[in-house]
Structures are given as structure tokens and as C-alpha cells.
Image (tube, rainbow, N blue to C red; front, side):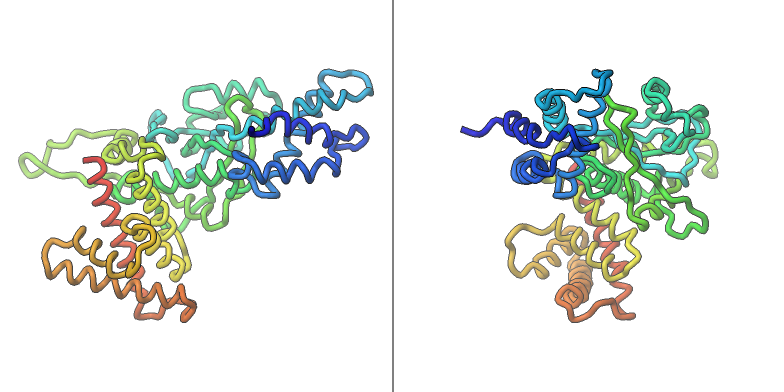
Length: 402
């Protein structure tokens, strides 16, 4: 018979409570609770040691806040009451958070509330907002409940953001489970635009960029907002996101008068339309997960400044899509699969397979420690690897959507 998680956590919380300590945390109760959280699902999949500590202190802080609101005297609450609040807080995990990723380089006209698959939207949102936003829960709650998400006083000036729903544990680190899930979805969405060639495109050659930002909050607790620390590379790369129009096909007499103008929002929606089924599929679909994982590695290959790491990212993306677990002779098999997927004749397939093996030879030398960086004559292989990965992703996405 499995132990009751509530009873176990409540027992630890009773030992955790120390009414004499300013932060109401007893060291004697801390370690046993940390060990329990790290050893039991779902917490073991959500938090490491630092995450467990953050979770415990967050629960204890809320318990203290509730206690102080209830009691006007200097008497402390009974440990069991305090422990119940801590237990309830910990048992709320995994929770669902809304995360907002700012794309400051985007300027899109018109109303913006575009749903992307199951868990994402493109909206206008004020991430920071004026200081007075956070002075009262009612003021911020009103902004959050407006159509389009978190808004400041002047919606016209609010930046474009990716709003992504993610479940798990969230703290100020991008490695916390909810934040990493949201970042994964953002990478998938932006890489899909890259495949489409229009919509929201990362412009790595832009001379002027603003760093992106990310925050997260629980929808039912909108005043508890966390700013998530993104790596410098990710902040800067996301800040290069620009709107790119799709290519137009002329028709009619001299190509005039055949195209109906569409808004930027409609254009973005049109770029996503071929991939709607892919972005709306659950994690139980293995074919979709292979493609989505490949999209993430393709994004990482594109944004990575280090050429050697970028090549490794591209190769891992190819393996994620074409590889199978516990295979031997992987390079030859991947080369054949890639050639028959993309080649249109024997000669073209032979060339693709040959290029693929050269790419993997360079990869192997790096992975096995014989080289730390690409040689000058190998740098073209990075572009080849990224191009192969994009072509494979387009082909697989097209096959998935039928």
C-alpha cells in the first residue's frame, strides 16, 4: 500500500514549523522534506535540490502570510494549521503557469490575439509595466483579465509576446520545468516560421536589437509574477525576431490586380496554417514528438554562435527525426534514410549520402575529442547540416499533416 502523500508531507511540515524563527523554517524539518520531494513523483520530475528548497520556502512564506492575515495578536498559529497551508501549497504541483516571452523587435499593426496550437498565443502584452501595476492585486488582476492577456495603460504601445501555457514547477531559472517546457514550445513555433519562410523570423544580421524578457505567473494568482532569467544568447537571439512578409505570386495581366491584400496578422496565421495539426497534437503522438524535438534542435543550431556546437545541434536534430533507439552502424543508415527521403534520383541520392557522411565525420571528430573546433574547410558542412535538417523537417511535417 502506497503512503498517502498528503499525510507524509503534512508530517514533514509539522516538523518544519518553527514559530521562533523569523522565516518560520526549522532546519530539522527541512532536509527530510527535501529528500521526500526529490524521491517521489511528481516532484522528483520537477525539482532538483535548489528547486525543492525554493518550493518549501515559497510554501512557508504563503503560510506565514495567511497566518498574519488571520491573527492580529502576537500569538503564533498552531503548528498544525501552519502545516496544512504548507501541505496544500506543495500538493498544488504540478501547476499550470502562463509564461510571456517578449519579442521586442516586432511591430505588428492591428488587433493581435492569434492562437497557435494547444498551448500558445501571439498577443500584445506589457511584461514590465509601470511600477504602479503591482501596487494592488485588483489593478493587476484587471489588466490580466482583459482580452489579449497582461496589458498596461496603453495597449497600442505594448510589445508583441508569445504567451505559452506550461505545467510543472516555476522559479526564476529557465531550467525549472515549467519554464523549460515553455521555452521548448517557443523554439518549436519560431522554427516553424523559419520553415515557412515568413511570419516571425529571427534576423541574426540586424544591427539594432533589444533583449527579450520572460515572466511567468499562475492564472489564479496574477500578483505572484516571476521574472525568469534567460541566458544572454537566448535573450539576444529572441530580440532579433522580425516580421517577414510571405512571397507573393503575381497573376492576371502583367501580374497586376490578382492579389488581395491581407493584414500582417492574417499573413502570420497563413504561415502557420500548414503546421496547425502538428502544433495541436499531444505528447502521446510519437511521430509529432520526433518532429517537434527536431524543430528545437534546429532552432538551437541556428541561434548557436559556436560553430562546433551548432554542428552538433544540427546532427542531433537529424538523429532525433531519422534515428531509432539502439541502432548500430547509425551513420550509414541515417545517410541512406536522408538520401532516399530528399533525393529525386540515384545521382542526387548518392550526393546527399556522401555529403551526409562528411558532415558526420566532422561531428565524430569533435564528439570523440580529436578536435575542439571545426577546420576552415569544414565550416561549409555546418550550413549543409542545417539545410539538411530543415529539408527533413519540411518533408516530415508535410507527411504528418497529409
